[in-house]
Image 1 (cartoon, rainbow, N blue to C red):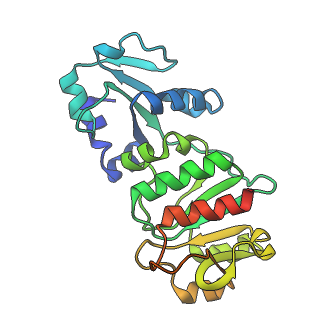
Image 2 (cartoon, rainbow, N blue to C red):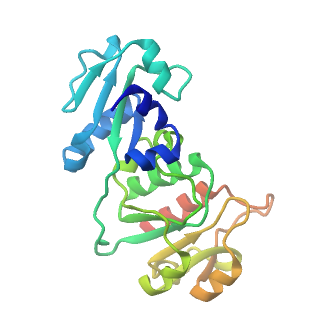
Image 3 (tube, one colour):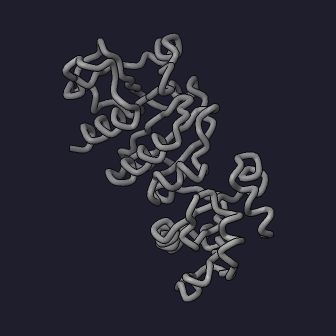
Length: 240
């Protein structure tokens, strides 16, 4: 891929057009290389390096570029000097036995999504479903925040919230008036719905899904938890 096209990958419309995204920095490239051992599609990645990483051991096609060129294709202020151009890929499309789904409705913050993916990868046994209108998981900020977890969590994009009712037997959501997470019914659900950082999930949709409401008990000193923190606490409760 030409450098001009690689630079365009900072924009979602070009990521979708070229079906590639950027993976930048030592740690993320190492995670990509590990994941490529189990996912052949990732072996089609191309590596761009500056002189400092000229001897980097990689299974990918590698191109040496100048620091100036790296600054042009990178979206960070101080590029490390190593960046991979990676094709879109998929993990197992069929849900594994006992796998649970985390459904995120129109979430916007790339840091939240990256953090959630990191937690799902850490605990294992989850897939992430994103509604239309959500932040792009291939956004460079999401990829960085995930710390490589994006290579390990099955992702489904543009999932209609109304489809959940036919896919899952029991759906849960969070509500201040719900039962506490420690309630046995919380663990019996197989899909957990979380909403937009500001607007949450439309009540009429939750009613249609017959979602069971649960709450994370707190002191009441503040109105709500950060979205990623709420997901993390729920995932921990499900796996402890």
